[in-house]
Length: 239
Image (spheres, rainbow, N blue to C red):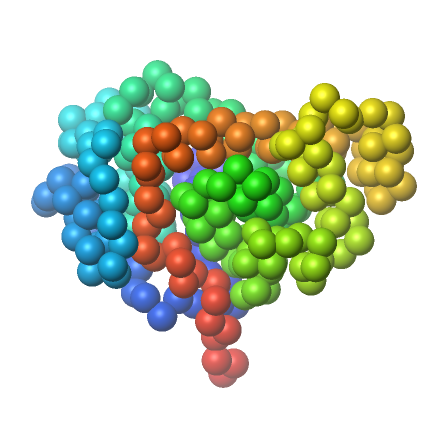
């Protein structure tokens, strides 16, 4: 449902950093979100430029503002991409509409973990700090593997993933780096691992969409929220 979009739950893992520092998320923010993010980054030793300052949350169109506050309420913080892109409302709406169509769809055989694995792996190939850190955190949570995001970002060929996922990432990386070389044999390989043609479209579309996202994040110097770095790394104590 719409109310569950962009919700990042820790599942069986938790972060040593508390993300519940916004207890009244639905009311207007008491201070500019960019200032809060900047202070948070300074606290954790993360530097960031103000190449494109975040817009004032309270001055955004109501549909965008409400969506961002929903994310803040459920996640405990606002991922910087939501504010960074909000300076252009029409582009923000188009970006998240396509994002949701690809990442939240229920059809097909790709799991949520598969989708985040594609994003993390190809974003690393594109040297995108923001997307590797943010989507790596979500990948750890969905797969319930605290090491997997680092593994696929550095060298997915040696990662603790299934042969099916490796074939998926082979194709994603070819789409990312050499899409002009894709041929029918690539499709046949994926078919042998149980992917149908619509799944293959999803793999390629996620790779291509986040190629856009990677480049927007990199040129604008978008920094990951500090909270992302530790999410999903620490196993919960079994009670």
